[in-house]
Length: 236
Image (cartoon, rainbow, N blue to C red; front, side):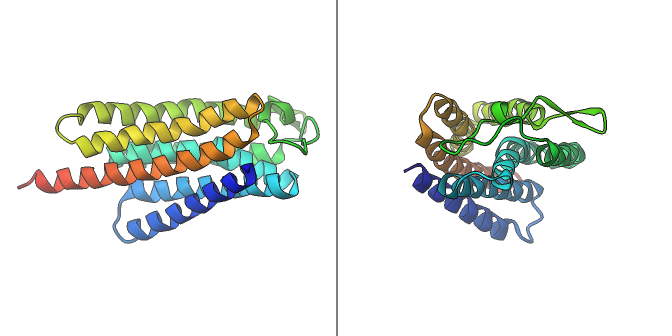
């Protein structure tokens, strides 16, 4: 059942990223371009989960799953949220986000495993990665550091911006408020799935990814449409 949920989540994320790409293409909306990257990372990470659950975990599948899901996806969602609120600030901070993701990529794919990958469940980062790792006598931050900061700071940015926007728009633009509430719920869903997975509910992660990506896309579409409508009405 967990494999079926994972396939569904990966398929939905892939479809959403294609739909968003086609919608954003040629429109010059920077936040939409960033969210295309976020959904693409979501899709790649979930397809890696499908591979790990169906044929067994390998170094490549787990590192891809960990990097896309824990390090790349949430910062891209956060950058897209910043750009949706202010494109100018989104473009200004994008080099910092890009640098962080690149460093996280190298940390994830260069760090050695502290133990063998388990074959009967989804591996957890804290059991297979050390907090730091060594290269030529240099101590470098491991992928767990990047994941912790990306998850904590990135999710806080997404949730805070969406919550503030929802509160401000609760009366004057109900659709914008609802869209932002959906974004908050979509961000929190995989977190809950991760907690349930850690206590033995193996199907919870796959199901939470399916619920999360659906809520994120629905929230993004509703908030974006409401923001465009309010912008179009304002001049008249």
